[in-house]
Image (cartoon, rainbow, N blue to C red):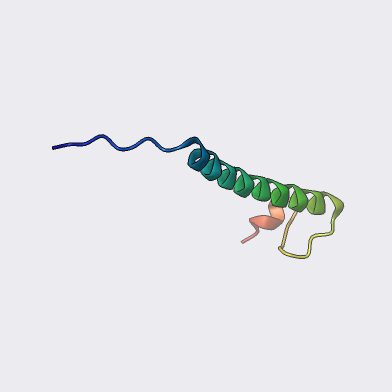
Amino acid sequence: MAVPKKRTSKAKKNARKSVWKKKADKAAKKSLSLAKSVLQGKTTSFVYSLYIDELFSI
């Protein structure tokens, strides 16, 4: 016989949500930092070209 699942407590729900939000916040900070470094021309971690022609010159 099917039995309904127990309801998740607010504390557990909030804990899971905060983990997700921290993960998203970390990714947002990282992408913002990367964008700032690209705009300032201080990129060292990857190859970046401002011109599309240079990217697709095969």
